[in-house]
Amino acid sequence: MQGRSLSTVSFRNSLNKAAATRTYATATATASPTSSSATPQFKTYTPSSPGRRWLKRVPRDHLWKGKPVRALTIAKRSTAGRNNTGRITVRHRGGGHKRRLRIVDWYRRESGAQLVERIEYDPGRTAWIALLKHQTTGRQSYILAPHDLQPGSVIHSFLDKSSWNQTKNGITTTLPIDKGNCLPLSRIPTGTIIHAIGMKRNGPAQVARSAGTYAQLLSTGETGHAIIRLSSGEVRKFPVDVCATIGVVSNPGNMHESLGKAGRSRWMGIRPSVRGVAQNACDHPHGGGKGKTKGGKDPRSPWGTLAKGGKTRKHPNKMVVRERPRR
Image (cartoon, rainbow, N blue to C red; front, side, top):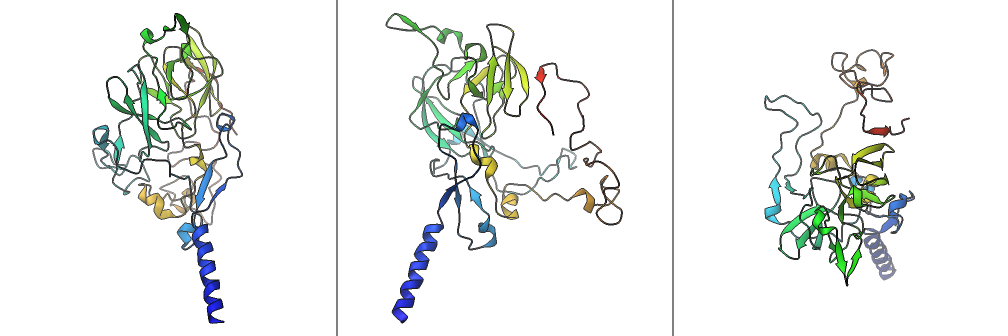
């Protein structure tokens, strides 16, 4: 009987070890631009502690295990949300792990073939980054990695007009609309999914840079403005000579991750936030009173700005064709 009980315990232990690294598919459907790949997988853990019970993370097995290129990093000096006078200007900041930020090339001005050496983690953003090596000059740089970009791929930047007219065997070819290629909006076909969009000519990419975000080009031309629909639903004008990268930003499953415990937020430098109804009347518009009353006011910030559905923009943006849908 003793031998039988020992074998039962060892069998259960083997099952627990196998379950510690199991993965499962989320029930939420992904957006149409990322439907070419399988549903994002998430890694869960055996609930050996309360913090691991609800921990759900995107697998990072494909990421580079070593250190980044030192010359392409810079130290992040933490200010804990204080300005030069020592007063808190950004709440809920402080603490966290020491980090070195990666210097990302938002301009993509260097033309020519560039080899994707590896995909890396960046503590300064939610998306993955890709390390490129120029096949002619040997210069290394980081870019925002598109979804499903594989190491060993070769990508190009066509922001320089001299690289537009390509001839092969005496035949002029069009610019390749491949994942990771950077082109001006005037050279991208209508309906293409893009990200890392610039706001002005010869400027850096500023729009659609977070994990899983993308935009769709609705119309463009040789001059004037192009019309783009953002992932928020807003339709906006952009100059036709700004930069844009083909594809969707990597790590689309980031929005479905669960940190599992409050301590993991503290590791990321995020401090707790206190509800307005739990504060005093002198500290928040929702504070004071008896019980959980808001004083008959609509939800608003500590400074009185409406938080849910209220109009806060005094001067409309002329570049916005249609605003994003609101609740």
